[in-house]
Image 1 (cartoon, helix red, strand yellow):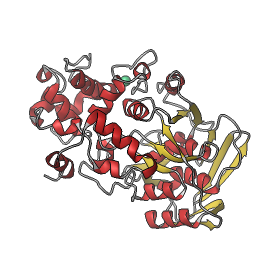
Image 2 (image 1 turned 120 degrees about the horizontal axis):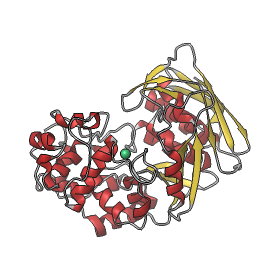
Image 3 (image 1 turned 45 degrees about the vertical axis):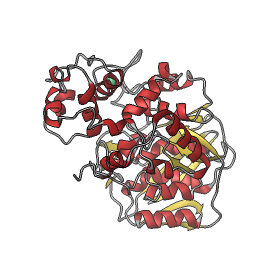
Length: 407
Ligand SMILES: [Zn+2]
């Protein structure tokens, strides 16, 4: 893989060329098969930055090209031995050329999506600035995803009143299959990486919660994952970001989506929370994400489910089948708490899971090892917030995390 950046003013263009051993099909770190659509993308920064450290440019590129690289990656300017070592150890990929020194920074920014999890992070870290990634169309790839309203999400981010940088990019269109999106989950940070020197960033906070960090949530493994390759500090991506002087920080990595939902709804940013990518004047109420989040919100608010989605609809089909489910811990939590759940689209799932309030009580507290993973500079602030607002799991509750999917 050969990677070349060029810049005009604030817009950075990346083009990449596959080596003979590379392939247009590959896998994301979570195991998802991916097919390449095109070999270029751009990242529009709000202004022309001063010099960008080569490690930041290289790592931003790596978040896009990693799935399709088989043996070596050649960047267009020398990278530090630390970053080359992290890519070598993490992926078995030879990275170079090597030269120069590693960078570091002091401040923390939040990779802010506007969903409940990142709003919860924002509530915990009131002084951290936001970097928001906004999808824009690619000049060479037709956009069949016009219902994806990234402009609405960016406008909501601007209304938070927080220090905000919006980075616009078409990098998601490098992916043909399964659909446009981040080739690696970390590609959302491409803009924050390019801005890290200018903003003096030493850490980037993400809204990945207990399920994503520890329970193998969503589309990959459904079991306890202390060595999660995406989000563990000692995993391949954690080490690569640390080598580039931008530590991955997961302030809500120890709490479930019930806790982040409660924090978001109790936050001063409540009016700007939006997890749905489709709605304009509010969440669409008809997509799978809306249905899943409605279950959690109804559980947190202890009220019946409000939805027009019926069991026969495609987005509800998975809940008519037996488990396992992606995000199953939250389905259990919701089914145990929503009044009248048996008469809803989750009725079948509730029958299979037989969860109770006590069997899901661990999801209301913080898993301590998640705090130990936070870089020291920000650990105390997160610890004290969890201690004061949430509380920590008992040993028995922590064991629920550590036996998830294996018991
Ligand atoms: Zn929706």
